[in-house]
Length: 462
Ligand code: UD1
Ligand code: CA
Image (cartoon, rainbow, N blue to C red):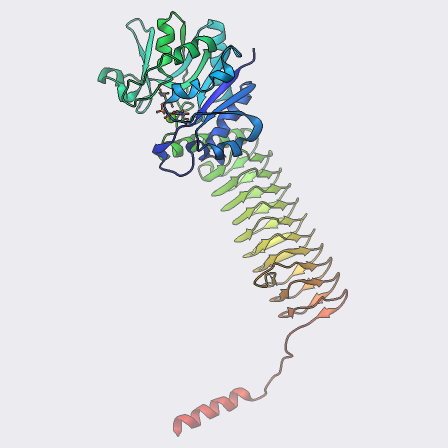
């Protein structure tokens, strides 16, 4: 049976105290609502409708056309939010999963089980609950003496004995659409928050002799709802742990998992080694045999096999098999470090290709540069790529040798096999096979030290 899901994301997220909509705050590098959407898809949900508020533009831009949108013009509560989907869904779909955009930690398997319970019991509505040692902030599941479900009570409306209940409403439900929409029309905002609570539909459906099923789940981490930054950090920690375990079980070595941070979208091959204090961010992919860290941060990088990256920050760049980077090196966006190339200690490169087997071993800055294969760049050499207004390219062709401490003033080319003498400031192209030398010839003034000492002592006497 095909399942349609409604994700509520129109709330103001006041408790986040942020100018960014709550559901766009990232958890392990991915906006929390994207986790919700991915989990739903993985659970087999085919159609997803996201309820957004007037400030939902950012959400629409981020999720694009992979989901449909319904506007909730005024934030009158979670029940009111679901009611906005009525024109789109009532009489059109029979079974509806409803969840919130601020609960990103469900496993797809749990959602699948919830749907299965709903279908097998033929309930009108099935809600997911868990028991929490500290239920603060959640709606409580109230049952009668026989343990039969009565209603959900929001914390702000709860009598003390209700607040003491540790079984909470996780906020994910499966409904038969007809009784759901009928009940939504009967909601009243007579409660502490003066909102139309979605949670009240369960009691209404039950009173109209619908069957309510409560699926009590045993993993209390999955249902964490993010209302503030403390909960955001808690979610980050839980997800980070899951991601680490997934990759370790898939063959990745982590010397110290506690200081290894991997974003949700990263991909690692078996026999990758992550050393302590390492951050694998965004869509970074790392191939087998590579050793990353200690103290490395890679964002949106593609790393081939047997690469070493030590004490470095690397952004939006590619590292081909067997290359080495670091320590203390900054690889800015748009770089390609080719096979067996080296970008060594205290270097910064930007929008630069370092060709196969080439070496930039120490203390260099290369910006907007193409380095061919088998090139050696001496210590302290920099490209002067910026004239104050525009950026220009430097090309250093195959087999060239650039001595230490040179300035290559772009646009400029060092042709194949050319040499550049140490300490040169190169402003013109160096032809193939030539030596480019651009510095004053050294002069040795013989006896100068002796004469200076004599001059000084005669001054002191006089
Ligand atoms: C809600 C539940 C509570 C449950 C908890 C689980 C209600 C009334 N309460 O409380 O029982 O234990 O989630 O995490 O449903 N939203 C809208 N439009 C609105 C209001 C909210 O789209 O008018 C969206 C929010 O963006 C959010 C979600 O609904 O993603 C939940 O709203 P929130 O205010 O966070 O509800 P809780 O107080 O956490
Ligand atoms: Ca919430």
